[in-house]
Image (cartoon, rainbow, N blue to C red; front, top):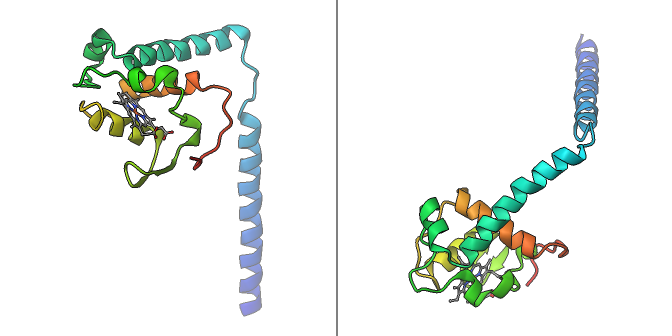
Length: 153
Ligand code: HEC
């Protein structure tokens, strides 16, 4: 009886693995099932570049876009670009990493908010809001081609 019980457990586990394995294989096949058409790719790129342009304006302190998005990135008159020209020393590809200034393991969005609050004396923005996403798009875009190197300094 006890042996039978064990056999059922083994059979059950086998069936479970088969089902899970089958599902995983199927999902693998579903991801990137069809190639995107050039028109779709162009549409995706336009959405992305729109965000990059908004982020570029925010990074350069554009007051109209800040007002539109309801954010105050700086109260010192300093825009991100004045300390980080072309976002060259932003290193988005190194995040997440231990950030000395914060004494914390931080993401790019957390570091962005640190700069808004500390050197800029502005008002912290929603980490998942439109302004943050646009800033992130601009910072990644201007560092495109950089090798992912999380944790680096
Ligand atoms: C008054 C100067 C100043 C302004 C303006 C400023 N920052 Fe910074 N930023 C700093 C300093 C200082 C550091 C820390 C030194 C470093 O890591 O380069 C820093 C670091 C960063 C880093 C991390 C870079 C790294 O590799 O560790 C990011 C990201 C960043 N800033 C984003 C922004 C954004 C976005 C803005 C605009 C909202 C902004 N900063 C505005 C001075 C500034």
